[in-house]
Length: 455
Image (cartoon, rainbow, N blue to C red; front, side, top):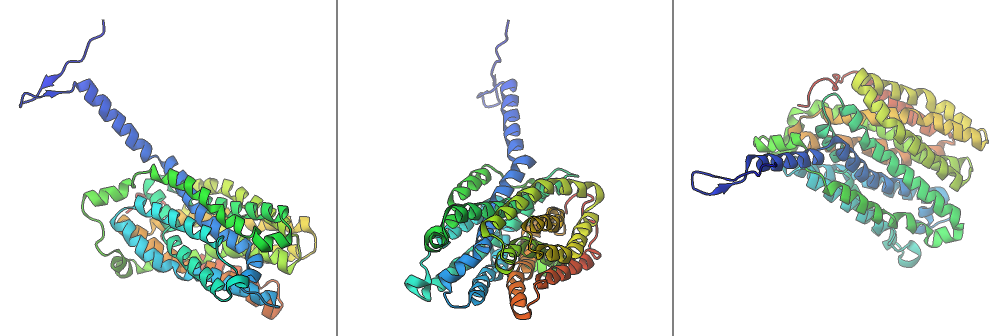
């Protein structure tokens, strides 16, 4: 016969629920909390939001050759492309400002609310590009409006990928920060791959005239449904337990920026230099190569987009593998392998791309992309590990975004400018080699961050 739990009365004579019911409620609450703090859920939510950021930057980079005449018409295609890439770089210049503002909010208010703001801000600004008038209709107001939207994108981007890396580092179980931290760059690769896929589909379906008339707008407008997916994923999360512990103990930083610049300058310099190398590997090694293969070498535009999409999805699958490997081997050893790969492979692969065979160019791009999952997957958790919890969001946002100015914002422009002025098609490769060497030298000054708990 089943017993019926009875209620008891407390000191005030009020009934209290039975112990079994109380325990069941506590267990259910604990299960729900554990689910919200699940590293897997955190990894998926982080990757979804970061994908939005790099989808936008990828779409802009892939369509730069088409966007140029829309906002900077003229008889010189190279000058038009350079102007478009200059606007592209402007978004990187404002990222440190966004990092300071959003990073401070993340360290003071919490990681989760800022991550929701960044994904909405990035997505709306991306869609706005697809609604802009062109120079043909409004003249100089068109590039001015493009610049304004790009600055807005850069501001929100300043707190997106760094917030994702911060949240994942603090949500990962001991000994697995490399594996789960790799899902931030998984979002990077998925966003870039989706950008290439969408660009490839649109350019394959539409004619050149249709692309110039309205087709270039479609990839930007498609960011809105992606924002909805990311927003749902992030809205179901709670803040990281590490941050909540700091908040509960009232030890959150009162002035995160000041603390970072006075107590953690060494970490700022190290992350900045490493970020130059990792960003250069992505923006030159993948995004710029799109313009290189199509504009300089004359390969098919839509075919090149398919290559970039396939490579991006391929490296996304490899990233958790290398992230997990860094938990066993150590971050420094794995990162060094990746940057060495960039330095050794970039010139030979570019020479193969120039042989005039599209299949050989595809094979060369695949080889050049091999260091990317190694570097990207392991540097992101490493960046987060170099700062303490109380200022991690701010410190990471400042240093990483400074690195993106050089490695991401300037290198596509410099690569195009060097190629056009010197006539040397290998100039972008030398840029990537230099960035990789700087990163390798910086890595020697970093203490192995994978051992032990987060500070």
